[in-house]
Length: 264
Image (cartoon, rainbow, N blue to C red; front, side):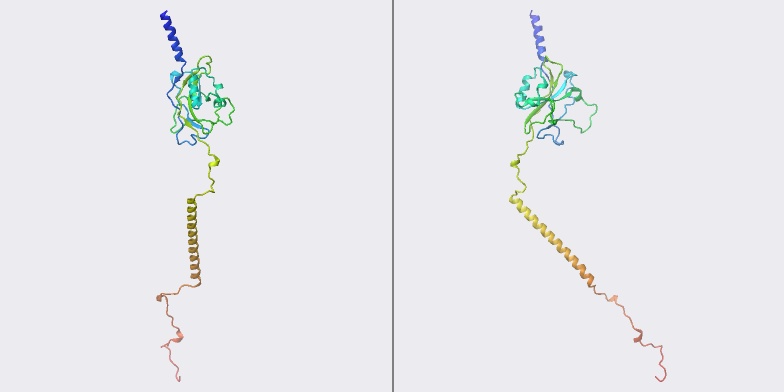
């Protein structure tokens, strides 16, 4: 009897252990700072979990990878029910934050999509943008996140064929809290026409300097024009003596070869 009891107890312990999702030591990461719009008012750009679910302990080929998005209360809520049977169709964005769940499942992806790529392109970043689906038309759509909210995210591997047993096969770790950007209140925006005293002084000085520069340019232009006009009306005097030539008129010179007639 004791041996049978031990076998039953061991089977129970093994069965209990199999119901716990396999923990994967991977934290979903936001893309690098070089990517524009990594965090906006309604979206977050995560790196795709490539090679994360290749472990032999998570060898469920037909399993789907889901993205889980949760607020502070949703993290506790998911941890309390993850060993139960989870139906993704009931954990939608529409009911996530209005009820007691505080989390939802979205971006259903086949497990082989996130397998290790055969070739790696240097510098290439494959992203998964959370909150990018507009309009939201399906129950588990990737709808825009509430502006200014704080969320944590993780990936879970769910077996779609398991209905009577816990169907979460594996899970990654949660991200740290991600705070979305908030829109600026229009009432707090200072109109452009309202200027401080310093701005007025700087604007005045720049205006005066611009006026002086323009006046100097006009004066210089006038001097150049006047100089050209005077040089064309009054040609310059000759100042070089060697440029003058001496001319002798023949009628005024005495010709020694001419003889005066007699009687003259």
